[in-house]
Length: 317
Image (cartoon, rainbow, N blue to C red):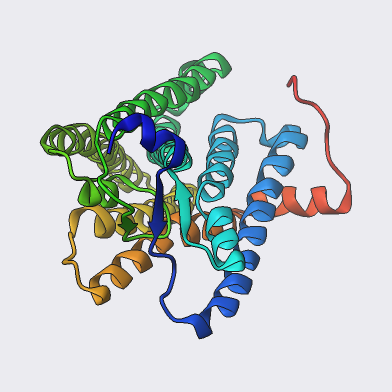
């Protein structure tokens, strides 16, 4: 099919969350509640940090940025899935698919980059406490987050452009509930060798480099903590990293399952891949606010003050 015709009339069919008609209403209600709780929970994190001057520190600045990215990340996939369930339609336009792909990759990669940035912040705080304020200045924190946004946008733009170059010969069923790189390359009738090589090297770098940075940061952190003489001091240092480690394990574990464990074309394997995709696109953004708020005393207190209306509007401090 010519690309001009694709952009005007071509549609994909999404596999969806389940093939079973009797499960559609339950899935709609379940994912609607998950989406509402995800957006509300992450928004509360952002508002509590933004309105409480005591949390205007690099660690909470990065946490607020992560919450914003999580809201946008889950919003690229869940609303469309809910609309498709409610209207009993699985279609998505060619243009809509490319737009969804671009934002999905941007916000998904943003999560990865921010988790690495947060690990670096913890490394500086624990291993170089005397120079922490100088190294993690407001300007540098802003530059780090801006660099994350620019890099992830460029990576997403590269992958989306390469998908745009492909041809799709007929109405194809994408074996997922949203448009992702792997499923789109599977249903293309063009040679996808270039796409696969770029995905291998660029996609691998996006996942592996931040993951290695996180590992190296925590190797230094653990080494520094073990040198702390008092047990109370070691516990306090470890407690500042516990929430971040839990989120890293949850996010990278599900991403590795989804992208490094290819499935066959059987329906059972597609359902397994869909379940893995749900974990990192839906469940992880849902759990992040609970992980950070339940394990962090300052965050719990800030949320309590915000909900009671006792906040400190001092953005400039």
